[in-house]
Length: 273
Ligand SMILES: C[S@@+](CC[C@H](N)C(=O)[O-])C[C@H]1O[C@@H](n2cnc3c(N)ncnc32)[C@H](O)[C@@H]1O
Image (cartoon, rainbow, N blue to C red; front, side, top):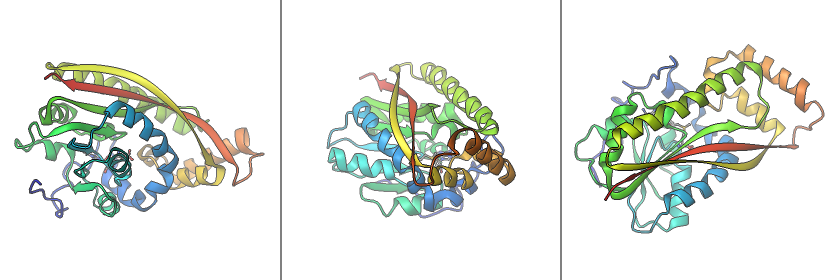
């Protein structure tokens, strides 16, 4: 295993700010202990998509970039019978604290930028994945170059981005989500195409259905379960919840399920052998 600075959190904060001007690491510090609870249903939807697209073999060496609480790595490790734990690269101390308690996780406390700046990360991995984390890359150009360098010939990178959620949203969040989804769609494919000269790029959309109790839905908003909600004040969130309740959920009981659909854009880049 590589000699990482996985126990050292002091020098990982330099790139904690993203282009949206809130502190990304603060956000994940606050949400870490509830993250798995809030994302349980969503993660269950991601796993079949990832299993299909990653085509994992037990001998594969795998890295998960922006791996969060390691929930996805744990499931992939167990379902694929991987021989080696998944390298889970994430700069949040608190998310990594949750991750390190899971089987199949090898935590590396770094940003993607820091991890791939090491020239020794070269042709180490059969598969690299990034699930709803690529929007946090501060220097996507360098990260994508690093990812391609880190892949063994014939290996591939799989990135999942949310492009649509069929759940009704409140006005202030709707505008933010639309901008964010469009930005995610725009950024990565041209960049990967430009960088991946010796790579084949393909994109496909996958949808899955899920349900969440009304009480949990409102709790997710109040706790700002996604970083986008950092842009809204407590009052704006309360107003949004009242708007939703009035327009859609007045007759839904707190413990009743609200069903909806998520659409993910899967970008796959295969390094030519
Ligand atoms: C929305 S969470 C996704 C976690 C996990 N992949 C999942 O699907 O549940 C985004 C993660 O990206 C991490 N992150 C933020 N900036 C990053 C960077 N520059 N490089 C790598 N990861 C980063 C955050 O700490 C957070 O854990």
